[in-house]
Amino acid sequence: MESIRLLIDEALPGVRNMAVDEALMRSAGAAGVVTLRLYGWEPGCLSFGRNQEARGAYDADAAADRGIDVLRRPTGGRSVYHHRELTYSVTAPVGSWGSLRETYRRINRALATGLRELGVSASCVEDAPENTGRRRPTPRAPRPTPRACFRDPLPGEVTVEGRKLIGSAQWRDGGAFLQHGSILLADEQHVIEALRKGDALSTTQESGAVSLADVLDETPSEARLSCALVHGFEREFGFDVSPGSLTADELNEAEARMPRFADPAWTWRR
Image (cartoon, rainbow, N blue to C red):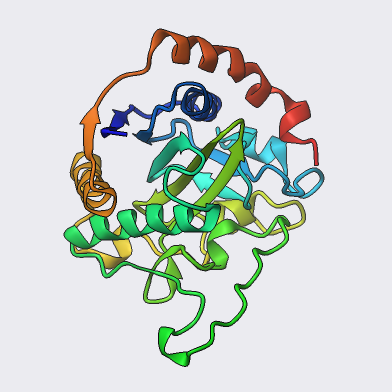
């Protein structure tokens, strides 16, 4: 590995975003390509984790009435509402940066480093204080219920004063991994509860999340945020992050994967 390829995409529909991320993962497994991708979502989209229970818990008609897409991610975790955010994805061969846990932590450290460049007091949740002489067992990730992703900061995740700023998930398959996550520009995660069946359509319920709008006097532009994140990755991994583009094979692979993410049988399989 001599560099990390950087892709910065315009806001795209969720189905397209997930198909591209999965295509990049396949490229990492087949050709060893390491990619950092930064992108947005349009229209807004509610996404479920790969194995999350969603069928019967969310109101698809209410989402459609609001112009909100609904899909299931290839990665694990729980519900996220994607709208006023910048999403990152990292795809690389398995073992590039250590174990799953080590890779997860290093990517999140890179993100936190970039955010601190903007004046955000970002840090990563630790398993236990380092001076105890004995580490507590790492808490298990919550069972993937309909509960929202941003309510529970987990070990390794990026927080500000104990509140989750970035929700991330990683999936490994075919000799490669995909890790992606949402960096909130503004907190709209209350939409998740509004789309739950049986819940009042609230727009004020606390989500447990924190956004860049909450912690900075001025929300950075996506270009400025992207630049800071690139610097964070360069510092953490010691490689240049160089602009690139999708190959023809990756574009074709993404097109071939879009129908699965658009299929209600996949979205509502659990």
